[in-house]
Length: 362
Ligand SMILES: NC(=O)c1ccc[n+]([C@@H]2O[C@H](COP(=O)([O-])OP(=O)(O)OC[C@H]3O[C@@H](n4cnc5c(N)ncnc54)[C@H](O)[C@@H]3O)[C@@H](O)[C@H]2O)c1
Image 1 (cartoon, helix red, strand yellow):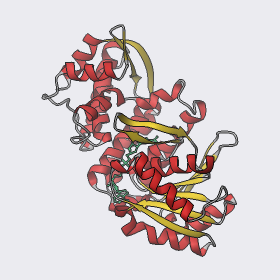
Image 2 (cartoon, rainbow, N blue to C red; image 1 turned 90 degrees about the vertical axis):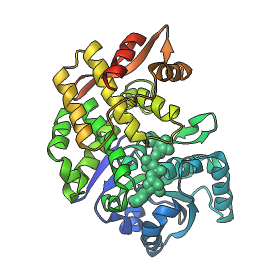
Image 3 (cartoon, rainbow, N blue to C red; image 1 turned 60 degrees about the vertical axis):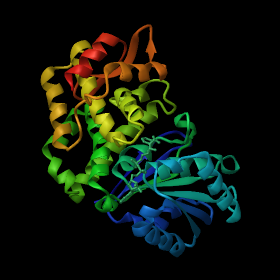
Image 4 (cartoon, rainbow, N blue to C red; image 1 turned 180 degrees about the horizontal axis):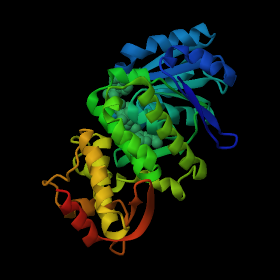
C-alpha cells in the first residue's frame, strides 16, 4: 500500500504522498526535498494531543530543528491577528528564508499556516500534513491559502503551492463522524463533476469508506486528490475550469452564511447545494432524473443533509447570491451536471428556475 501522486505545475510541482502510518516517517519523507534545517510545526490543541509528538520526533530524528506553535481549535484562528502571532513566533525562532513551515491539521490550520509561509519574508517553503478528510481530499491540494475578515471568509490570501503533501489516512480514526461525512461530501462532488466510475465505486463501497477500511479509504483519497490535481494543473488560478470544483457551493455558501456558520459544517451545506444543482441540471442541462435521484441517494445514505430548510425562504437565499454579486441581469452562473461524471458552467439560470429547484428540495 501507499502511493505518490504528482501535481504538475512547472517549477511549483510537488508530490502528494498517501500512506497509512506515514505521519511518523515525515522526517525521511521530507529529506529528498533539501529544505533548510529549521522549521515550525503549526497545529491546534485538538490535533496536538495525538499527532504532534510523532511528527516532532520524526523531524528531529531526521536532523531538523523543529519547534511547534499550537493554536486554539476553530475557524476564528484563520484571522489576521493569529497570523501576526505566528509571525512573531517565527521571528523568535529565527526562521530565515531557507526555513520551512509544516501545517499539521485540518483546512483551518492548512489555510492559515500556508498563508503564513506565503508571506513570511516574502515566502518560505511549506508542507501540508492534512488531518481531516476535507483537508486530505480538498484544501491541502491546489495552493489556496488565506485568512478571513469580519466582512467575509477567505478575503485575504494567496495562491501558494506546498512543497509536498503528506497524507496519513490513519489519522481519520480520531475524526468526528460529522467531520468525516462533511469531507465525504466533497468526495461525492468529485465523482459527479469528473468521474462516473469513481461515483459507482463510492456507491458500492460506502460502508467500507465509513469503516475506514485501509485500502478503500486510501483509494478514495488518492482518486480525489488526482481529480483535484488534474483540474488545478489546467487552471491554477481559477480563471476557468477550476470553477467546476464549486459544484454545490453556490447554494451551499448561501446556507452557511445565512445560518451564521452555526448550523451546517461546510460539507453539509454543499450536500444540499449539490442536490439543488442536480434539480437545476434536470431543468436546464439535460441531466436525467434517474441520475439526479442517484446523487440524492448517495448523499442521504452517507448521513448528509439533503433538504433545503423550510425556515429559510427562497428570497433570503437569492438575496445572499445578489450580495455575493453572483446575479447579473436576473440570471446566475451555476455549475450543473449534464450526466454523472460531467458538468458544465451555465451562465443564464433564471431566478424562477432557482426558486423551483429550492422548493423541489424542501
Ligand atoms: N484552501 C482550500 O482550497 C480550501 C478548500 C476547502 C475548504 N477550505 C477551508 O478549510 C477549512 C475547513 O477545514 P476542515 O473541514 O478540515 O475544518 P477544521 O480544520 O476546522 O477541522 C475540523 C475539526 O476537526 C478537528 N481535527 C482535525 N484533524 C483531526 C483528527 N485527525 N482527529 C480529530 N479531530 C481532528 C479540528 O481540530 C476541528 O475541530 C475552512 O476554513 C475552509 O475555508 C480551504
